[in-house]
Image (cartoon, rainbow, N blue to C red; front, top):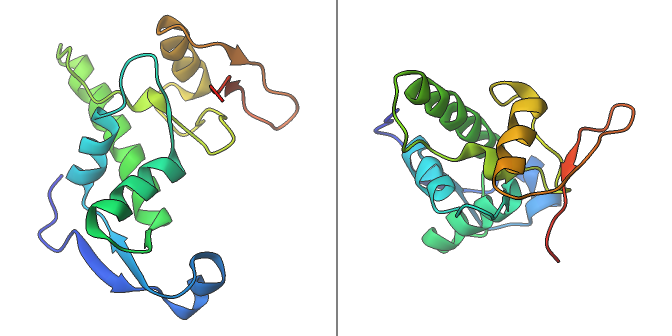
Length: 141
């Protein structure tokens, strides 16, 4: 899970400037994303944007790459489940990461059902999905 070329700071590409503005962007390493997820305490959740802002803040850049951050969140989730299947109990709590609107991630191991189960076990309330909309956690305001 280690990439010697990451993390790196790059200029925000012109095609991304409408969304992020100009400046610099962090392309984080998988280890950094995993470490950030591990900071989310039991009973709390973090959105993908909060994770990206935290990572960007660590490097004093304007943004963190949404694509690589999202990919590495999913990799951390899959690695955590692999660790759990080997009997490890201290795994990365990926289930505490939700989309920006609080919705659960269907790409996580076990889908939204497994994520909802883990969040409920930590005391969270989950609102059911409707239509194509995924279930979502009730976010503290």
